[in-house]
Amino acid sequence: MLDAKIKSQIDKIWNEFWTGGISNPMQVIEQFTYLLFLKRLDDNQLNKEKQARLTKRDIVDAIYTEDETELRWSSFKNVAPEIMFKLFQKEDGVFDFMKNVGANGSVFAQHMKGASFMIPTPKLLDSVVQQVDKLEMADRDTKGDLYEYLLSKLSTSGTNGQFRTPRHIIKMMVDMSQPKRDDVICDPSCGTAGFLVAAGEYFHENHQDLFVDEDFKKHYNSKMFNGVEFDPTMLRIAAMNLQLHGIEHPNLIPKDSLSEGNADMTDKFSLILANPPFKGSLDYDGVESSLLQTVKTKKTELLFLALMLRSLKTGGRCAVIIPDGVLFGASKAHKQIRQEIIEKQKLEAVISMPSGVFKPYAGVSTAILFFTKTESGGTDNIWFYDMQADGYSLDDKRAEIKDNDIEDIIWRHKNLDKENNRKRTDKSFMVPFSEIKENDWDLSINRYKEIVYEEVEYDAPLDIIADIKEIDSERTKAIVELEGLLG
Image: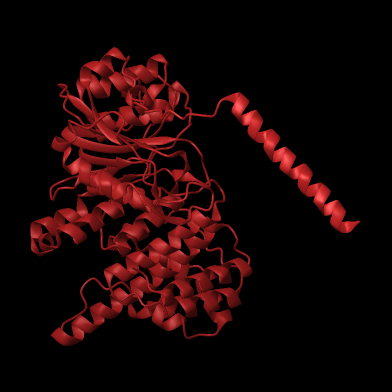
């Protein structure tokens, strides 16, 4: 957990950007990210120099040459604001250097094309640099928590349509998926890489012993984490988020997952974790043709499900957030994709979430599907859970509350053998494949959940009228007595 001091420091820097003229939350985070990266570059160089002194050898893979000393954080932070500003703005200056260090293998630098320096004044630049310099980023946990807190500002700003999947929902999905040491994990609409970061943290929290295994560390840092994102700003933020969480070389792919030319993503991943865009619509001409063979539709939420089926290896698992309409939509495409997942693959669980989970940005009801690609069926009983609380109020404030089903969901999902005798009136229960098929592949929990109505007895109407008359008589008597006192 990030301590109050660092949160206060970040809040102060955030406010400094806003009062200095940068009020767009995404731009604030992007400029903040550039400064963190520059500090990180210099910190890495300082570590290399220290190692060289200890071993009395030349520096290996130096980031800065002697001629580039003025471009280093440890140098420019000490100069006058006007000089610092010129160092950032000039050709082959600090910012240009940052954009061109991709040759050193940084995944962040690989996505710097199109990056812009937008800090408008020497005063603001100097102020923010001095405050960033004071941030304590000694270990992976602190670095990661710091950046996550910075990204949480998107959730509170709510502008430009930018919002993130709630982190507790992501963690629940990851905990239920239980990533394995040899998994190749993908988020085909990764945004700020929240799912990939959470998957990485799962190993630190549950399998710390694996990090002494060189083969695992190599896989973890280079092949395990894959994200696809068409927004270059999001890619840079995702890269920084992953690196600050200790994932040095994730594979971030700058493209639209649904567009033509993505055939190389076929049968590639063993675990997909995602919350793809809802309510989008594309022209057929712009969609990868193989996806239309699975489901003929323009709706992005259905196309993404087709993409995930194609991208998974046989035996691969998927946990994906979908709008409720996917569960019961009556169109041919809706039924087609549900039948594909239920009949030809193995659908394991449907978790229905309350509509307030994505407030204040969207009130749409959502669900989470958990399925495995088998290409040979295997769906037997589907586990349904009616989540009614996620630990936060379901209004726009999303204040923390005691009611929370998440721990129960995770426990029950890990013990599905104990769910067979649950009643349809419970929060969770099993529904057999045959019943789902009979209902035209409908996955809406309301189709199967039974509601118990409690009988309420009321007094007879004449008795109620008599009670009203008695009350009215007493009221009249009281008024007469009050008038007598006043007279």
